[in-house]
Structures are given as C-alpha cells and as structure tokens.
Image (cartoon, rainbow over all chains, first blue to last red; front, top):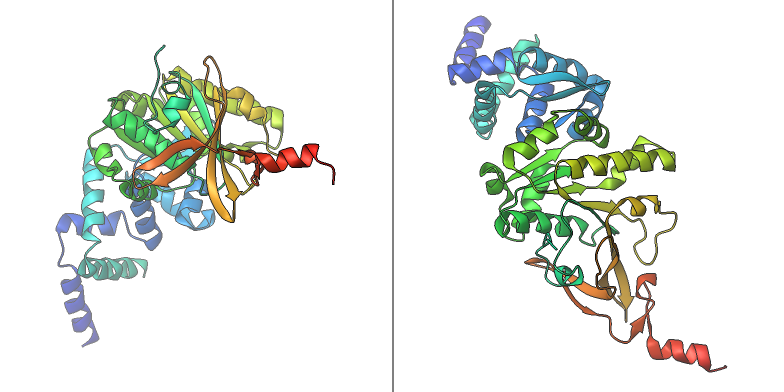
Length: 125
Length: 253
C-alpha cells in the first residue's frame, strides 16, 4: 500500500518538463548545488575561488567544495587554474546556459519548487 | 584636450569637462556618502550619452544590488547588460588581479566583447586584505591600475573612509599617489544638520576647481552645487563661520 502511494506521488512529482527533470536529477541534485546555480545565474560573469564563492553564498567552503567540483564535472561550471588558484565560473556552453535559465525561471513557480525539492530529497536517500 | 565626462552636474565643471582618458580616478568617502552612486552615474552617462560601454567590477555587492540601486535613479542597468553595453562582474581582488595579469583573461575578454571604455571598481578598499605591507599593497594596486589603463579604460575607483565626519585617521595615502585624480566625499555638520561636501583634491595633468562644494543625491543621481559660503574648516566635518574664526584669531578674551 505504501509503495503504491509512493509511486503515485512519484508520478505526480515527475510531471515536469523532461529536460528540466533530467537537469535536476543529474546536475542540480542537492540544495547546495541549487544555491550555487542560482548564484551563478544572478552573477554570470563571476570567476572566483571556492573560498570566495562560499562567502557570496553565505556557506562554509567545506560545505560547497564538493558540490562546486561536481557542477564543474557535470559541465554546469568550468574549473580552471588562475595564478595558482583554482577558480570556478559559469560554463560558456549556450545549451547549459539555456537549461540553467529555464531551471531558474521554472523555480519561480511554487509547484515546480515542491517537485524539485521532492526529487532532491529522493536523490539523497 | 579630450575629456571623459562623468555626467554629474557640477562635477564635470570642477574637472574642467571630465576625467582625462585612460586614467584612474579615486573617489573616497564614508559609508552612504554616494561613492557607488557617483561611479554608477559615470558608467550610465558613458553608455547613454557618450556611447561608451562600461564594466562594473564589484568585490562585495551582488549585481542585483546594482540593478536595484540604478533603477531608483531611472537607469535600467539590466537592459544595458542585455544590450551588451554593460557587464557587472562580481569577483575578488585576488582573482581579478590574477586575471588581468594574464594574456586573454576573462575581464580582457569582456572589455573586448562590449568595447568597454569605462570601469567602476567598487571598492579598492578590498585590496587591503591582500597584504598587510603598505609597500606590497602599493605595488599590487599599481599593477592593477596599470592593467586597467592597458585595456584603454577610464576608471572610477571607490575607497571607503571609516571617519563619518572629518578626516579619516590612519588612512593609507600611498594609494593617493598612484591615482590620477582624487576626490573626497565628506559629511559635514552645519547647524545641527548633516550635509555632504565634495572636494577634488588632485588631478594629474590638468587644472581643476579646488573649491569645496556641497552635493546631494537626488532622484537623478549626484548633483554638485555651490561652495559653502562664509564657512571654513569644512573638511574637518565641523565647519565654523568665517567671522567666528576671525574673532577667535584676533580678539583676546
């Protein structure tokens, strides 16, 4: 019975644009990553170190370091070396930027946010 | 001589038409005096009136804060970014310094992408965390300023002054030697009211008005008006009537 209810909820929650669902599940699959992509969407010309990005995001560097690296691995951010520092910036790939814009705009909608939160929590299990 | 007009009524007159091209221009003042507004107005005027795109390099405030502040003066910075006339770059002093030192860095790329001619650096005070040594700091800022000039940019660099009224104590004036012009914004207490004063302390390569002018931040931005008539000791923060000083100096009590 519980499995059936969970499945029904799952199907309801999966009712979103398939591309956005894929972007959410494969790339923005934590709340810290959600914060980080929001930050880079609002400040698309930022290039900075993990320490400084942590300050901008109001989190500790230990909290964001892994997520930053994963976003870079997944192609949402670019990681590079600059003057002996490792720095992160938003990927220049137009497709990634387009997906990011769609995702952030969709996040303005409460229904979408509820579904996104559901998927992030499920992904954490 | 070519001038880069700031678009600030009164200030351009004091600067005899504006800043000189490809110069670094320091604007120093206490919190709330209008340093950032002055810098945004310089950028806005360049884009809208002079056809000169601009960059804002911010070390603290988010781009959103600039959009909102600019909107309060009727300046649509967001649209200017969409039109490729403006870029607001939030970064840190260490990264921007390293970026400008290399060939083909991101800031250089943005300058070329939009054809930027002006830059607001908000604020230079953040460089102070890069070194505790005044000589190292001077060297770092010198290199940074030169990299902006190399890119053909005319820069307004803001710097925070901790003193709300009067002269700031312990300010590192070594930086004042590195810049081409140095403008001070000060709060002044006159008859139980706080007003704002502006003084162009230095302008390399050009004459300028040495008067201490009153200024206000209106719905149109910074507006510089008349000098403080009949007052002296303005920059101390607590000016006296000139007659009072005369009496103090010449009449024995």
